[in-house]
Amino acid sequence: MTTDLQAKLKTLPKQPGCYIFKDAQGAVLYVGKAVSLRQRVRSYFQKSTQHTPKIARMVRKIADLEWIVTDTELEALILECNLIKKHRPPYNVLMRDDKSYPYLCLTMREKFPRLLVTRRVRQDGSRYFGPFANSGAVWGTHQLLHRTFPLIPCGKVWNGEPKQRPCLYYHMGRCLAPCAGLSNPDEYRQIVQQVALFLEGKGDDLIAQLTAQMEQAAEQLEFERAAKLRDQIHALQEVLQRQKVVQPSGVNEDVIALVKDERGACVQMFFVRNGKLLGQRNFFLTEGAEENPNAIMNEFLKQYYQDAAEVPDKILLPYEITEARIIAQWLRQKRGAGVEIRVPHRGEDAQLLEMAAHNAELALQSLRQELELKNEWLETAILELQEALNLPNPPQRIEAFDISNIQGVAPVGSMVVFEGGQPKKSDYRRFRIRWHPESPDDFAMMREVITRRLREALSGDEKWRTLPDLMLIDGGKGQLNAALEVIHALGFQIPAVGLAKRHELIILPDADEPLELPRYSKALQLLQRVRDEAHRFAVSYHRKLREQRAVKSPLDEIPGVGPRRKRMLLRLFGSIDRIRAASLEELASVPTMTRKLAQQVLDYLREE
Image: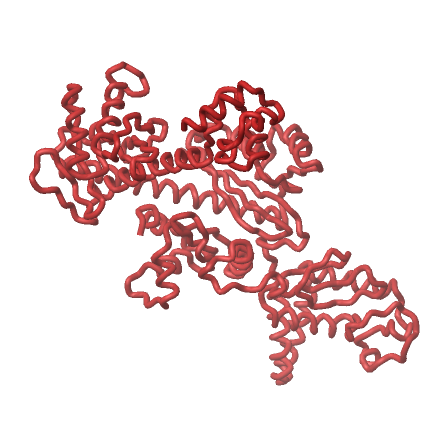
């Protein structure tokens, strides 16, 4: 388990929500939900937990995690399905898309609208309510509404013309019989509006009525009827539970909340697309603790949407900002359509903002705890390293060097810098090896890199003047001795050690035997982190040079042959070998070529 992951596990909240496991490359491994994020996520890493082989493999790959806090477990469930649909993690049991969630639909474009249960939302003018997590509750409410309101119960479409005799539902008072031409469209529409109001959450009167009927049935000892009414009430209450993570309107909006204290500021964004909360993103502003919240929000909107891939229909903010009008005009120009910036004070949008602010507060608190744990770990590692290597000063600045080449091809060197245990990328340097021996010589290459680094320091260059408290050489005794020769020859007194990759042994200058630290040693882990970064930096530069070498053509070296002539020659002859074998007349006949230039091309290629 990585140190960062350990720190995050200590800051997990106890609230319900969703968690996302990621591997070392940042790919999503698994998305889950929990009533208590802290209890559920930590259970994956307890030694006493008996995992299935599949989950055990997943746990070994986990390098990072994220979480989103919700108000209820039901909200976490809906959010979990949205995230799984978006990321399709390999270790999830992949669920179906939104069709696995039922909706209640009022077919408003029909002359006599019907109330249906559907699993697909269409842009057909109908009104959709949901999705809902409990399919049984939705069907129960569907039946309840049909028993309460005289809607079309057969599911067929009728236009009000008399086509058949009314069925039994009409005689039972459960349908107005539009199939027999007996229904008044205005009266029917009024009933549909009542159903819509009920599904919007204004069904308290009906619940009170059912509760009274249930109590009356119980008093009359009609326990079976009372139980059915109780189940209907429970189903109705469950369906009416509003979900802030899913908005039936299907809007596209960004919800932005800001939380700040003496530690800094955190901006939390929720991305709602087609009415569904699909993700979140935190932005920490460590320098904004003293800034006015209005100024922070203005600057954030401008910086974020400058390069944002998508601008939504609406942007929800926690308070009015001074530049709202001009920012809205700017976003309208970028999007090609109007963008509404508003501050909701009630309803689902206000609840979403409240949830975003709660997540921002948790993120800021988590960041503070992570930084405290990280700084504590780094301070301990630096002091342990000073003691283990018997250094005169704590190694606050460590410079690591590595060589990368394949059989001497495109040899390069790298220098990475860590200050206070943290990478300082502005001080990274890379070297293209100038000396090319007949056979690869890693010792000579290391000698060249250290020489060039220290000579730059002697020159007084501001970028190279700061010397390290410790030099770390990636390699064994030979590489370390090559570096020490240069350090002593140029008159420097810089401690240097090597780190051998195979057994993770520390090579000391004057010791007969290498130093072996325990694998759990913070000092060793810090050295490994620095060494691995130097290796990554060297390999990436070496790979870049090899790719450039692979696409380079001998024609690039000939004066007078530019990109256009190069394309023309390769298009007509097909390869460098055929150009080399061509006659002077054939080359000179190529458009834009002269006889003199054709002769230069042949001389260069044949000499090569």
